[in-house]
Image (cartoon, rainbow, N blue to C red):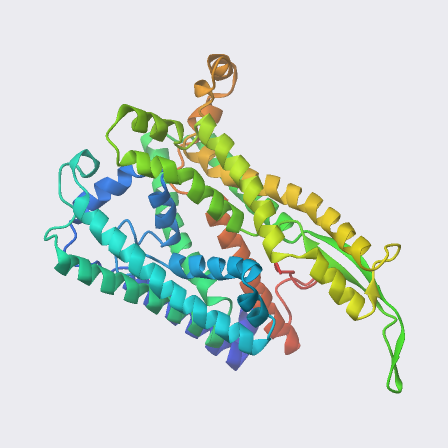
Length: 461
């Protein structure tokens, strides 16, 4: 480890890239301390404390806890991610965008430009909705205090301008990190926001040891569980199903081409973290809307769709499996892979080229996708187990029996006060793997020793 860190700073170019990356992340964290003028922070903190488990809490995690403090970076990078996903989906149904995406570097620049325009549009809509919603907040959700001190179009215009500019600035920071730093800039910004929130959360959990809420055995079990979860995620994220590919020999000019064998790697988790984001958004949206409606039915919906409730878990798991298959079907087309193999003389041994090849790849991918969907569902349920437990007592007919015979830890949780698992841990581990892989590539290119002596660390891609 010491040799690996020393080698990083020996190479001038790599040293400059890493220092530049840290400086850009420091700028991001400085901006995260600047609050939008005209906000009553005490009322806002009370509101987000009551919004736990809704879509607002989910978005707050992605913004690096900037939304709950309503800083200039409150929207975070989610508008850019949303615009990217929308453009990716449109490439499937809009022939014009599909054609552009296949034009190489020029097409990629056009898609990036459209993504930026979409980001600005989404920011304008979201920032207006947030500014208007902040003015309407009050009552029991905020302790009877108004969130906006001086409501009106002046505050709305200031909030729209500040939030939109903040997101565009974050997008620019991410692009600068990707170009001049190390790693993917957008991913590293999300990574930094999540990690910063984990540190005080972990500290507050350990404070339970002094108050008696956490005993030594529970803390040891918690640490072992976290290490095991991280190791399990790394293992699955690096998992691949390698389909052997052979290329027929052919004469091109005066040279003999082909004749070699390779493989087509299919990831176990092809969809990445996107299915969980979709599923969490869809599942928490009804509870968020119900929280603004003062009616017994709405409150009942909010309670049954809270963290740990059986109905919430059932919908959440179903949504994860659905969106995993949906997203994988969009980003991976077996027919295109089959056509490309046929074009360059490649084939799968024992499988006829063309339709049979695409059907074989699709069959293998469907099985891997199911395993990946179950893996995502398992990881997504970890935060509920640690924070609130699974409320098995709410299951009709057998709830009381289960609660009487199952361990108390299962339905009461472990008293963890920070969001560990699900989307956050997948992003943290995945970004760390990709960044280390890029650093190792720089070291290996210059004949320096990598992080792992047994071989290079394989990233997610």
